[in-house]
View 1 (cartoon, one colour):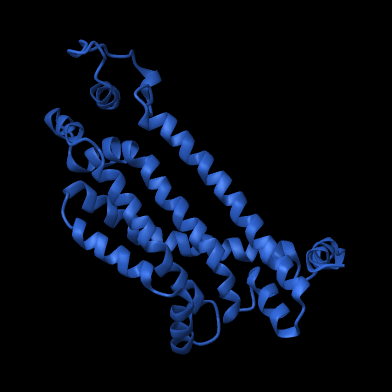
View 2 (view 1 turned 135 degrees about the vertical axis):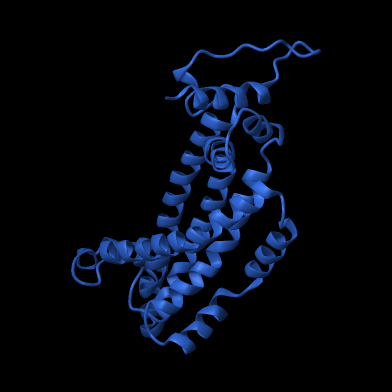
Length: 260
């Protein structure tokens, strides 16, 4: 039997699907570490990216920080944090947070910065506060690009979370390190296939979410609440085609102003 067949046999072994080190438990641990790292990174990166995109200041800083952070070797960071923090989850979690921040920060900044400047200007002209401009205008319009950053960060973190088993006995990476130590290459390949499967499932889910957000917010006919009020009409442009950007922004602003 070749190595691939042995890996499939290992995956089909019922003993690997129950007990303290079972595949379902390791998968949940892997997803838990990924979600925790993304949540902590998003708490810092998304507000910073939105603020920088809103003010149109600090673009060079964002580019420099994201480029420098992406150049850092994750395994080197994990080794450094492991020496400083010791055995446990803290070291890999901190390394994954550093890995996730660049994509989240760049996605939030690029999404808000790409919003047509006339749209928030129109919102301010009708009395929106800066917070309302961000929450009701810029965030909905920038959501597809922001989800692209979340998607990229998620794929990077979930595929790199296998390194969490380097200092902590958890996650799907444990199968790789245990198989390497015992020369059980079927277990190593089986663990790698599980990581690939989880990554592909998350990619499909996030891609569907991004397509849905694009259809809802980024197209001329989209809008978070456009169906709740009559569609405003605009005079055609010189070419005879309606101004899609003005129509989209007006629907967002008009419906927000009409709410009690």
